[in-house]
Image (cartoon, rainbow, N blue to C red; front, side, top):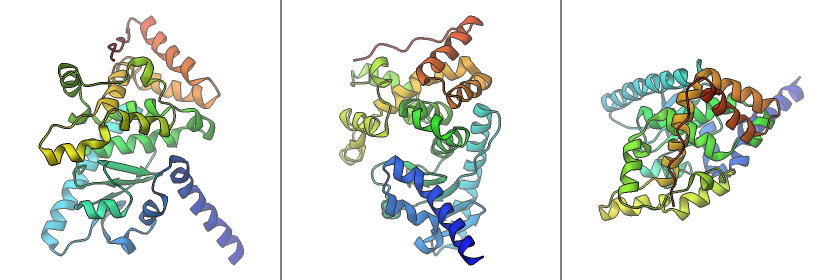
Length: 281
């Protein structure tokens, strides 16, 4: 009986850690989220941990604000997917030191399997919804579907659902007005793996925003915003039913590009033409 229980626990650990290993995240640091209270976080609600603090009133306020943000993020996920299947555990850091200790350097938020990690800059419903979208998408994909799902699509859906100002239509217009280099529509669809996505983020200087903030310069988010520009009209026109049908087709073995274009064509056939992405350089 003990051996069987040990075997089951081993498989649970493997299932939790596999997404981390495959995503190339800081596995050892992110793995600390599996035991958040041992790593300096304290529970404030089921599935919600925050960085420990001495001021009980301030901790209660922070917890209440995050619970409200979680409710709004959940509503955004439900609106996009029709229902919410995933229940990620959320870990919120109020200092950059806390965030870095869990492997979150430079980014605003991260997701490790079904564990969301928020930096002090991501304590809002937008970035909760963004990371939750990744978890929700994975909960609906078969292993084959997940393996063949391009990074640009997963990120684009998350950007569209989260509606963050950093990745908004307004930011896109600012990038265009200031002639900031952006991925082309064709170039975006070539970002299929996490490594290709991160290389593009680096190539377009999106990982240098900490230095820009230090210099008092505006941040730029050309890669994430480009993904949102591609997926926002697609999601608007295919709707929830079209998104779920698309996921079913990918799970059943349909090539991603064929299923993606077919969903857009089906929407166009109903008089809901998907606006083509703006050519960029």
